[in-house]
Length: 226
Image (tube, rainbow, N blue to C red):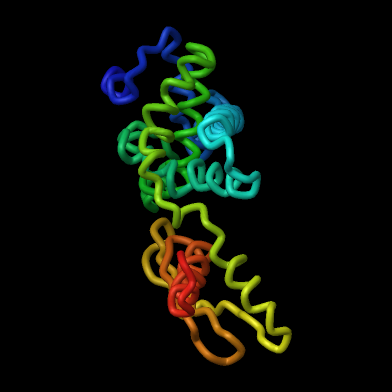
């Protein structure tokens, strides 16, 4: 645990909180009630993370509209962002997983890593209070906010739809054309169609992300500023 505390830059007063944050439900089920899973901590961590991030970007961007604030917050706290931070902190190495989950790559599964990040945050919050949680979030989630890519929170699909709707006879659809990789690390390729013509393709870690990237390419090809 000391090595993880070093990575977290936080020393626990109650180390049991950190230990609990690392217990996946598959392990808790195997030991039959002798140990609680991290699900309750994950629930709390999700709320603490959302409040701190929302408060920060609200004050940092006083002229940003509500819709863009919502998309920015979503991009900062999404599964992709949190699992990347979890990997950076090597949280997967410390997780307690059931034998089946561990064997099937659970230690590298995006959803498990993202949930564990939130659980660890909750453990820090319960142990050291809001200021400790805020410091951890600023050292991780908000660390690179000034360099955060606009692509991660711009809604290209909505922009494209608004342009196409100027011509009522036109319609846009998104078609999944490829899906590769193992379950815990999928890559999706999507094509966006204007009526029956392909006007853009995109690749992403989720179908939604791939659709956004396809819409972005379509907008670029149409000469729109993206």
